Amino acid sequence: MIGLVLAFLFACPKPPPILNPVDWTEPPRLPSPTAGSYARVKDTPPDPGVRQVLGSRDWDASLSGAAAGVALEVVLGRGGLTPPEIREAAWRAGWMYPVQRVQTVGASIGAGPPQALRPLLAGVPSGSDIGLVRARGDQQDLWVLLTSTPRKDLGVFPRQLARGARLKLPAMEGVRFAVADPQGKLSEGHLDVEWSTGADTDGEWLVELRDQGGLLARFPIYVGLVPPDGALLRAGDAPANAQEAVAQVQEVLASVRSVYGLRSPQVDTLLQSAVPWVQLNRSLTASEIGARVGVEEGSMWRFDCTADTVEICLDEMVWDPRARPALLADQLLLGIGADLAPNGVHVTLLMAKE
Image 1 (cartoon, rainbow, N blue to C red):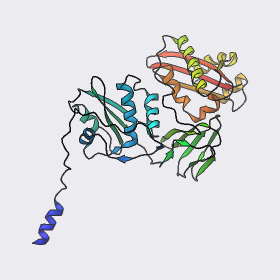
Image 2 (image 1 turned 60 degrees about the vertical axis):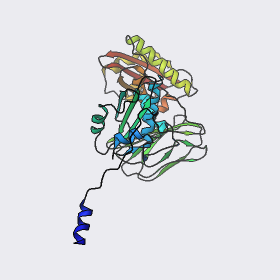
Image 3 (image 1 turned 90 degrees about the horizontal axis):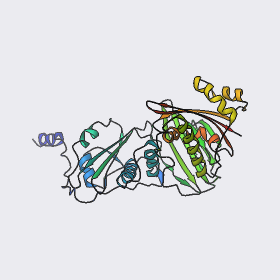
């Protein structure tokens, strides 16, 4: 008889946890939007409202810190939801993986979670990490949901290093790395074994990790200085015509280079004359273009992008370690082509070191 009772007790499902009632008029409790390292951090939300909405689903403190950074920028009217702003909010919070989805839902202050939030959570794919926060503005509460699906847990990396420390990447089978130092010197290879280098130059080191499925992670590590608070690029204004788009490309690159203490790039006559030919031949490599315009092997780069604005378009190139040898060259020459398209602006950019 005792055995039957024990069997019955062990067969009963575990009751759900008892949650205290939420006072929705109380100010939300946000996780920190800044972190000292990059890592996945499973934790408990500090906000009781977020805990209630999530139920038994996992919550990541780093990804939620990114959501907090995005939410604060929006409710304070300082920023928006552009890809560059979201990615840099993720970096500041210690999230190095690509963010797949960003969704926001507004609610009246003190009214509790909006009905639209639950189907959004229900639609998060199994295995995805969740970043969820509630922030309060003057007029409403704003719920921000970020989702990301890392294919590999890459461990922990520092956001800052002292000058002279070792920058290390652990061995990871099937993973390739690309690292650009603050002067644009590029190192690439496979992580079949650990890779490391002396962080002997102050500034921003850009790290990218890829596998056969594509991008795993991309993140900056700051040596000898504090990581910046703001985004390098934001949304920008949509150009009215192709000529304005070309001018914006030059302005954006000049602005980016000024942040790194470099002089503005210059449009080169030979590179510019090659742009129409390059635009008509999308498969041309940088080496083939360089041979035509007289630029030696390894000193020529081609970049194409399409996005809503020039800033968003160029963002991918600015944060590509492989573009850093050109972007951070002492003297940079350009050839610029741009066309307006139904989906925004298309840019063809030729870059060469003088």
